[in-house]
Image 1: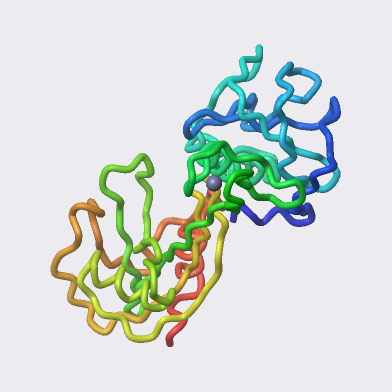
Image 2: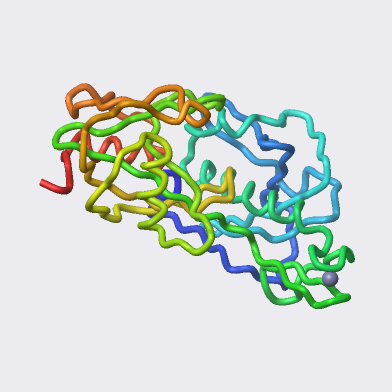
Length: 274
Ligand SMILES: [Zn+2]
């Protein structure tokens, strides 16, 4: 998955004392796009020495490489804004994860310039990864929206869907945001009922994934269908929903998303409930 960058490690601790040096890498974005260079499927970031923007915020490090976020609009020869959707398979893997994680921070910083309580301009907290209002002391931490991905299974079949009205056209699973005042297990049951009208009995946690493009923390579950009678589905959310047997599932080659990882796991190992 996109966060699996072993033996490399991403250090996400905020270190306020760090100042950008010439060789540090720059993360820069516009809406759903990153300023990078891609050659033969390999991605390169601008270096601090190549830009003139003074406003850089330390984002994170991967091993010894430090990444700084610029919220300015940068224009650099050789670099171009590339849609994040086109960067899902770039190499090396740590840079692919850096693009997504940096975008999460970019989204949060740009949405927290002003206090949500009193409208005063926010300042960066002196010690924490947080924005603080100097007027009313309101503190905003990076927003992370939990959502579930659900592999609904019936013996050797899994329920796969396709989204309606989204750029991503590949196979998907039932998915949805956690609502207030519910557990993630309740989210799983509610989303399956809402999207395909099925009840599930057993719900089993599988794995999680930070998905920075949409500020999500994805929580993957397999769920046992009580009935395999698929009569209709939510046409607002989905363009299709169908049972597919293990042998008819395509092999995953992108190794990016939790959804693909779950489908591939089911293709290789089958139902966790048998
Ligand atoms: Zn305030």
